Image (cartoon, rainbow, N blue to C red; front, side, top):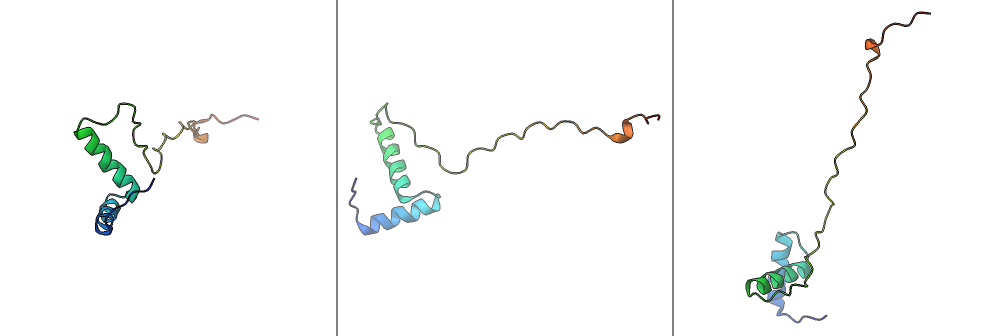
Length: 77
């Protein structure tokens, strides 16, 4: 899809996008979706914008308790 923009408008969008850690394309989509939602015209079938970046951190696996050798009774040989 081709979108023709005034170069000054594109530069302003690119600067805004960089400030919000988005690509220019993602910023345009974000703004268009917000405008459609505000106007009550966002199609119900529109999928949510996928979250980018690092996936959420998973909880570390539970570790087995380490046995203290000092707690073991001495062995008799």
